[in-house]
Image 1 (cartoon, rainbow, N blue to C red):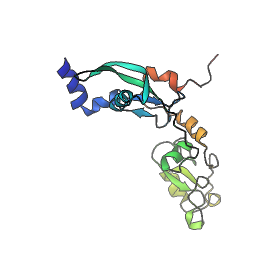
Image 2 (tube, rainbow, N blue to C red):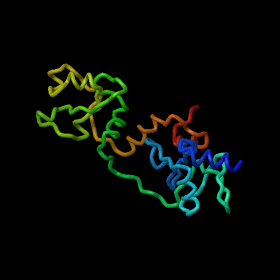
Image 3 (cartoon, rainbow, N blue to C red):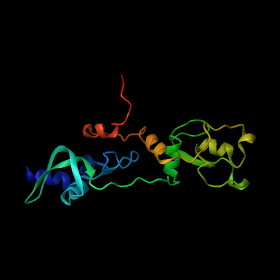
Image 4 (cartoon, rainbow, N blue to C red):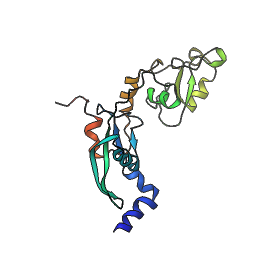
Length: 194
């Protein structure tokens, strides 16, 4: 049995992804919603051993060392509060998240790029207020022309998001798998249905 267990977790790297731990800040909120703050089970066990986190929930699986046996943590809470960022970094990923992974001209999902509303060739700058997510056909159609000349319209005006807006947007895009032990911590501040 020990040999099977060791083979499952040590020799099969894909198996390591099956038991991630949800990482909560000291206030019991996830460090981030999108991407969801997850650690590998090894990182979670190490942090628990070093007394940097408290284990809130566990999987049914056990890991063993010669002297210790521990259930794999599924939810851990940092003992020290990590202050959230006050400013949202201007990255491609955050831009797509702000725009809900949709083209801001036609609403298409999928293969996105970004577009300068006021083209750089016409003095437009790369900023939250001038860059939007766009699908390739819309980006090609618009090219270096103004919206007025193309007859295209934006679904919503581009603005710099605040951290809380981006965090709430991230909650709309949960990962493919949410372990049951995580749900109470991911949506505890969501409005309850009557």
